[in-house]
Image (tube, rainbow, N blue to C red; front, top):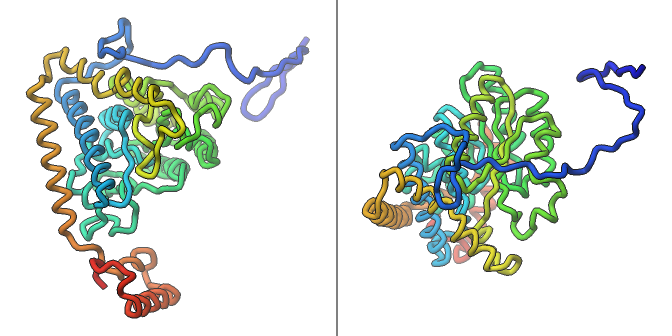
Length: 397
C-alpha cells in the first residue's frame, strides 16, 4: 500500500511511476471574451452589464486618450517635448480596468496607463504640464515626459526601470491589509516585465503574504523589439500565476467589457478573500514602442495594419455603444473636436509656464540637505556662471 509524505504545505502522495510534469499542456489557456471583433455580444457570455453612463464615459475616455496620444506624439516630432510613448491599440485595458475600480484603490502603473488617470479626473492641462516639465508639474520637471503621478488620484509616479513597481505594489497592498482597508492595489506591466526578476519576486511575495493586489499584464506581443517567442516558452503570462499559487485569468485585452468584468471580479476576490490575482490581457501595440523607436524595422507592416483595422478596441466598443443607442456620429464629431481644441490650448498654456528653479534639483529627498549635495549645487552654479551659453536660459537660477 502506497503511503503519503506529510510535508509542509500539504500531504504529498507517493507513486511508483516515474513521471515528469510536461513543460506545457496540450491546449492553450482560453481567453475570456464578451464582445466579438464586430462589437456583438457573444452568446452565453458571463458578464455584468455596464450602464449607459459608465459605457459612454469609458468610450469617451478611450477616444480622449487616442487623441491625446496623437497630438503629444506630433508635439514631440515638432521638438516641443523631448519624448513620448503612446497607448494606441491598448486603450481598453487601462480605461476599462479603471472603470471597475474605486478611487480608494491604489495604482502602480508602468507607462501605458495614462487612461487610468484620465478616468480618475487627471486633466489635459495636468498631462501637458508634466510632458513640458514646467513649474506646475507635480514632479517639478525631474521626470521624463509620460512619467505621471498624482497623490490626489492614488496613482504612484511612474518609474522607468522595468517591473520595479511590482514588488512595491505588493508592499503597498500588504499595508492596506494590515490597516483593514476596503481597497486593493492594482499594478500594470507588459510582457517584457515578466522577464525581470522583480516580476517573479513580486508574485511569490504576494502569494505568500496573501496581499490584495491585482497584477494586470498587457501582453502586446513585443518587448520593444523582442517578440514573446524569444522571451519565454510558457503559454504566455497567465500560467505563471498558477506556478506561484495565484488565481489567474486570460482576457481579450481589446474587449472593453471583458477587461471590465475580469477586473471587477478580481477586485472582489482580492478584497473579500485577501488574495492576489493575475490578469493577462492579450492585445497588440499598434504604435511604435516610443518616439525613439521605428517598429517597422522588426515587425511586418501588414501585421500592424491587421490589428489596427480588424481588432481595434475603440472601434469594437463603439459598435456596441452605438448598438445600444447611446452614441452617434454627431457625438463623435463633437467629442473629437473638443478634445483636440482643449489639448492644443493646454499645450500652449503649459509652454508659457516657467520651468522649475535650479534649486529643485536638490530638494525633496532629505529633510536636511547633506553637505555633498550643498557642494554639488555650488559647483553647478559656478559652472553655469562660467559657461552660461551651455545651459538653458529658461530655467530660473
